[in-house]
Image (cartoon, rainbow over the protein chains, first blue to last red):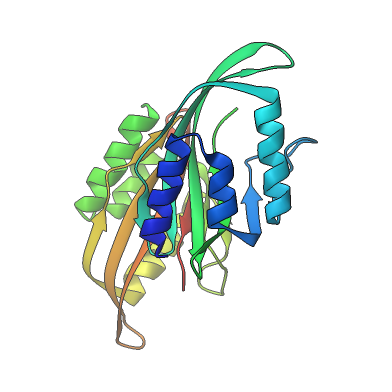
Length: 121
Length: 121
């Protein structure tokens, strides 16, 4: 699949709330996932689909999702960027938070080989 | 200036070919600039407006620009992404190249404090 098609599929699936399906169908087994900062639950960088699955599982276990939005993708060569917004409640504290970020993805051989997220805290 | 206004100004100035003016008017003195890879002319990461100026000067000294495009910015909080395309000739070899990339910028206190570029070679 071309980067354009993968980008559109990622956005379509995320808009339907099928984020796990994104990982299963579009990600390389050796994908790297990079956050702005690292802590014990979310390291700055993880490698491998299993690590991404665990991070997603942690996210859904600890957050109630009220609403999300995903922009159309901005595709340039093998990379694409998506703007995302999240309205969630962090279960351990009950704190409701709204935040937004840019995700940048790289495609190689028809699979996503990296994701990197840009946001402020 | 808000991240939205800075993002729009960056795109407006780049579309007019005023890339140096972007650095002079919108960048923090302590900006960091990150490429995909490093070599002797373009290190993977540079810090400081002077370093950015030198990198831009090297670019314009060694490339003839035939055409560029800049997408509207995708703004999320303090970050924004822009898709860029370049049609240039590398002077030392005479090779004409077309390439595209995603630039991701971070704004703090009304100035751009980082730029990072995503592309394939």
